[in-house]
Image (cartoon, rainbow, N blue to C red):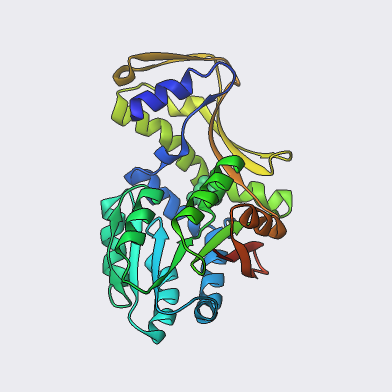
Length: 307
Ligand code: AVI
C-alpha cells in the first residue's frame, strides 16, 4: 500500500505528491508532538483551551446518558475534561478510534480513571459504526473530531466526511468539530515554517521514511521545505522543493523518479475556515449548529453540531 501510494503520487504528470497520512511513523509522530508545543503553532493549545472551557457546558446540549467516540485517539489531557464533566451525570463509555495500537494503548492508560475505555483499531468511519453498534442501550452519542484534522481533508472530502458521520448518528446525537480559522498571513506561514525548522524536519521525514522503509535513495539535503498560502482554496500547502535536477530510485516500489530543479512534491493541505462556514457545512451535512466556542488568542473554533 505504502509503496503503491508513493509510486502513484510521484508519477503524477503535473504535480508530484505524497499522502500526508504517511507523516506519522515513530519519528514523524515525535516531530508532530514537538510542533504542537512550538510558540508559532498555537493550534493545539487553542484546541485544548477551548475544550477545557466548553467541557462543563456540553452536557446541557445532549440527551443523557451519553457515550463518547473520538476519531483519532486524542491526547488524554484534552479529552479528559469532557469525560470528567460528563461523568458527573453518570458512568461514561468512551470509544477512541485510531489505526495505531500504541496510540490507543496510551489513550486507554490516560483516560481509564475517567471512563470505561473501549479502544477500536480501525478507520474513522468503520470504527464509528462499530462504536454505534456497541454503545449501551438508551445512550446518545457524542463524537469528537477535534484538533482541526478535518483541515487536512480536501474541502469536498471534508463535506462528504461530515455527511458520512451524520449517517451513523440519530437525531439528538452530536459531533464536536475543531477547526483552525483564517488569521493574518504571516502568522499562518510561521506556524508551518517555524524558525527552529521543526516543521521542515517533519516534512523531510516523509522522504527519510521512504528511504528507510522502501529502500530509496532520497538525499534530504537536496530538498527544501516550503509552506505556501493558497488564497483561492484558503489553505496552507506544504511542499518539498528539489534544489537541483535529480533522479531518485525507490527500490521496493520498483520505481525511479526524475525531479527537475525547483520542481516540488506536494505533501499536505491544511485548510483554514471562517467560523460561519462551519455552520453552513454542518447544515449541508444534516446537522444544526448547536453552539460554537471561539478562542481569542489563536483564532480557532470548536463547534457542537447536533444531528
Ligand atoms: C494534524 N494537523 C491538524 C496538522 C495541521 O496543522 O494541519 C498537521 C501539521 N502539519 C504541519 N504542521 C502541523
